[in-house]
Image (cartoon, rainbow, N blue to C red):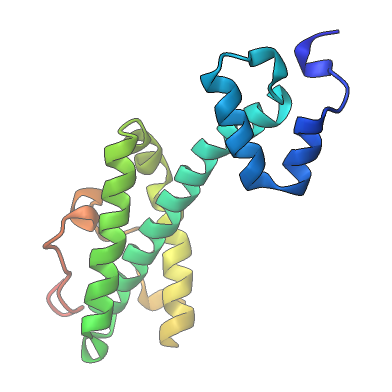
Length: 158
């Protein structure tokens, strides 16, 4: 029987009953080198999920930046400090994730257009403007989207 096939242990039961305590116990076991006592199956699942969380957070923050850039550009009369603050905050969140995990830059590049599609739909919903007002292809370079100083002009200025 391999370590992944071990019968349910108190560590596995603790995982379902008190996640925070499970983390504390797993950390202690790792520090003590007691690898044979670890709940390996759930530990693997949690480590895999860490990467997924960062990717989801990256896309979520990017969609919010793109959403507010679209609203900024296509509803200039509605521009507010709140929109600007949201753009700045979500850019900071993206920068922090990329600083901690630079390899996610490639993921961000790959998902950029999909994130734009979501932001475009949300912009139409939030503004009440017809979807066809917003370009089908993202009008912003990724570098501009992440640039702390970039804000698009209104639709007349491009």
